[in-house]
Image 1: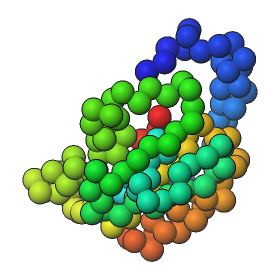
Image 2: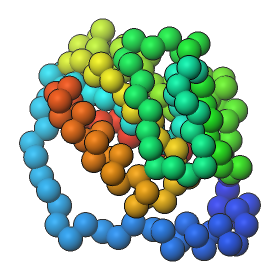
Image 3: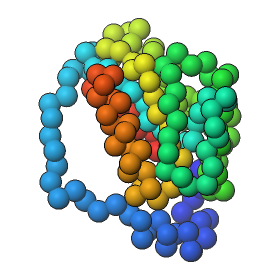
Length: 153
């Protein structure tokens, strides 16, 4: 993981400039009990199936990953030089914890894991990701997902 002090000042300024503003109001919904919840993963680690188109540049698009994917069939094409891939190379669960979620299903801690999960390129301006994020929201609703585990990198 890169320390803030190690990031060049121009990149620090970019991060600061892109900082998110607070929501004007907070929407509130009553979530289901975890034992009844259907959970999906959204990661910004630019993970995708090896036979999918690699992430390139800062496009703002996403990749769909099936819930029964084998970790051996995944690839990562994150373009940020500030992204340390060593943890991912040792254990994919760091960025995409499907195995851990399945363990929680098996133990009754959560209800189920979604059939579909989503990956974005994290080093992309949020406004470029907005159209794709809206598509993913619709797909999550269509898959009856109650909760999303966000894995920002």
